[in-house]
Length: 91
Image (cartoon, rainbow, N blue to C red; front, side, top):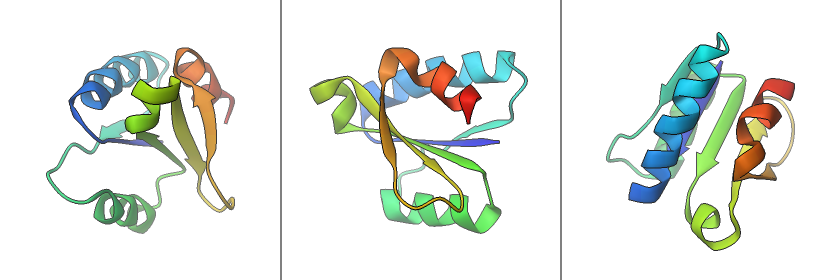
């Protein structure tokens, strides 16, 4: 249901946190922490056909936001990290 791409150590810790919360809500979640470029990881999520892609990176530390991308919908949207799980569940 959800593919999470953390970029950096702080992002990985946050990814693990929302992974647990989303799994508790009954969603299937992949945290892609492979040592590959973000573009390769995004492409894999698209190839598999995961409906929701979550990117956690520098924006988390800088602005306190993460990016959500819904499959088949143009562009990403930023949401406050504190509202991440609710925003994902709303999709």
